Length: 181
Image 1 (cartoon, rainbow, N blue to C red):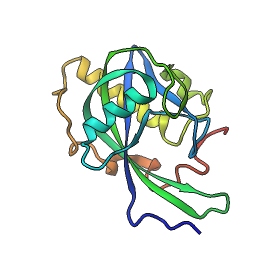
Image 2 (cartoon, rainbow, N blue to C red):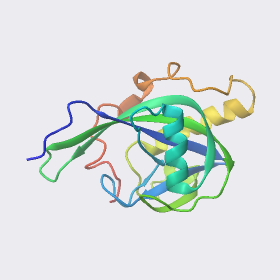
Image 3 (cartoon, one colour):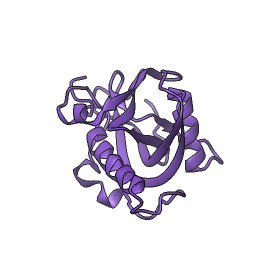
Image 4 (tube, rainbow, N blue to C red):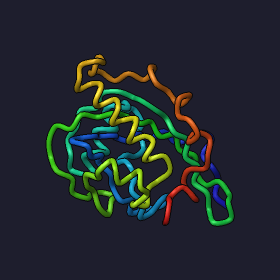
C-alpha cells in the first residue's frame, strides 16, 4: 500500500494566450495521460511560483513567457482504479505573456501546440478537468492587460483565488477528469 504525502503537492500551470489560441500540452504520463492540459509541474524546494512556472513551461514546450499573475488554484485528486487517493495536487494557475518560441513537445509532453479557444468550447479535444474554464479566464485577463485596464506586471497571488474557481473546485480532477480519455 502506498503512503500518501502528509500534505498536498504544490504545482504550477502556465496559462499562455496569444491571438485567440491557448498553449496546451498533451500529457505523456498519468494523471490524465493523453489529455490536453496546461504546461506545468511541481514546484521545487526553494523555488518561487514565478520561477517554477517559467521553468516548467520551457521544459515542456520550449516556449519562453513572462509569468504575470496568479489567477486561480485548483485541487486535483489522483485516484487509482479502485478510487483510492494516491496524490493530492494544488495547481496554481499563472497567467503568462508569451515572449518567444513556438511549442515543441519536451519533457513529459507528447505534443505541444497553440489550440484555438473555440475548440475547447465544443469539446473537440480530450482535456484535463477545468481547462476550458481556466482558458476562458486567462483569455479575459490577457485581453484586459492588452487593453491597459489592469496593472499587468508582477506576480499577484492575492487578487483572484480558488474561492472564485466555481464548480471545478473540490471535485476529483484526475481519475475521471479527462473528457473522452
